[in-house]
Length: 333
Ligand code: ATP
Ligand code: FE
Image (cartoon, rainbow, N blue to C red; front, side, top):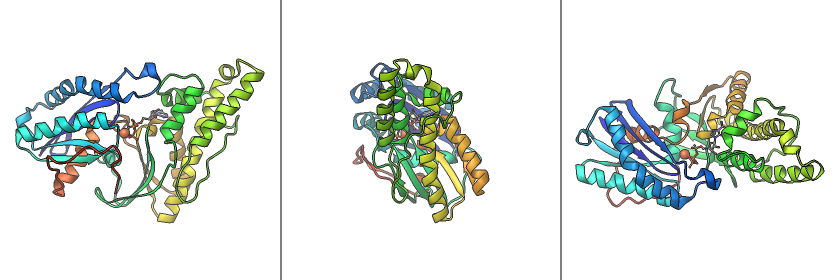
């Protein structure tokens, strides 16, 4: 079975080809245009998708060594994401499926982030608990099967990735700040500046308080010493990162214990964070967890995870019609 998948939910245009369970290509074009604005500009994102999509799909087909007519199905990200961005990928996929007379598969982006664990070995076994930490979401999900997932906790305000990016911006780091903050944190003292850990009932998260705390703290210190941020950058980064990790770990620990789940999966772009990866490995040793983290290229937005999810849906007979519409707020489960 040969599936072409298209991902265009935010600012990465991606196409992947999956043939008989083997990922044969996964081409990603990252949009650089947003850097100068310090965040994704939706209208520019849609236009960049329009420019990138045809060459990205052609490259994916070429790398896989196939032609359009070899495809058995066309999959695309239906949502959640930016409406304009989703529409570009969605319209392309619908048109291609119609022209080829092949089935269409509509994929939920958050489900795809989780099922990225099934692209390569080792794979978790159902049921498992997944902590999805990305630029727009922070979710604790009980994954009972590929198509049966329940969100038991999520952020009530900012996502973990947003917490990294927004605090990094306060420190004057380039966008997106997460990877820069991670790098600087390696040389810093995580306990130097204690920031508040957002406490939420159940398994929910809150990160907006951290951003405000960092803002006021920097303002206060800079009033006394204008070079405060520059002189303490590594310690500030390490302390912020430590706070975000502790916030995530506390809810994860509780959820895992209550749900009696010991297979813990990490998904989404923030899974690239070296501090979080290390903390999770340490926690795994302490709690007897088995931890799963996908390869980096499958953590950030990519069409390979959409293709893998589409395969599960194909096997379950879950196809879309030409009437399917992109949904920026598509829910999981
Ligand atoms: P969503 O899937 O919720 O729509 P997204 O797909 O845009 O959001 P991802 O691509 O999964 O998000 O992840 C991007 C986020 O990951 C950004 O906020 C980025 O700063 C963060 N990130 C990437 N690498 C690191 C890192 N090493 N440390 C911290 N954060 C990181
Ligand atoms: Fe994503």
